[in-house]
Length: 162
Image 1: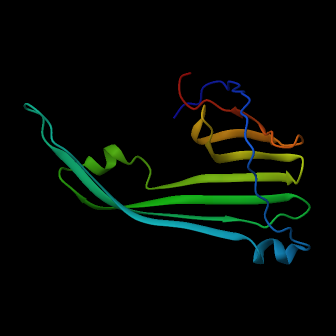
Image 2: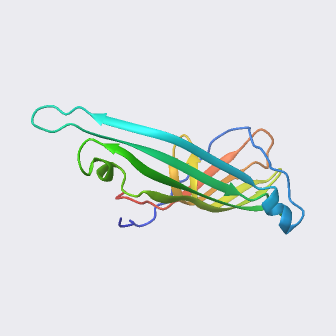
Image 3: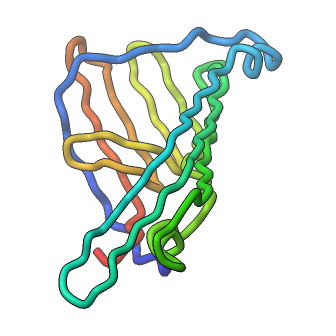
């Protein structure tokens, strides 16, 4: 996939929630107090085509596994990936045409977070802003220096024609 030139996305959002993980005090605790996340599921799709077009469909099992280190001096690292396995398909290549990659590195980031100041996340990450969702390659920042006010902004590399 050809990457287009990067574009800058910026906006300000008001909010008031923020959570902080327990701070590690040494390198061993960074990994032993880290957080593992996972998802296991099954997905199926059937397309009932009209006219002379053949019906299509497939099903697959999927797994997501991730790990985020505990913060040390406010810095933590995270990584996660998805894997998919075809369990059935109606016609040859129904699965391949819908699922291009059977495995994907979905997140790999560095997070710097300080209580009372905010956080910055750099790298491939999942975002869920009102104005930007999905996975991005870029930087997000939340500034929370003023009580009951969070200013959120992001810069994301555009991965399609923008």
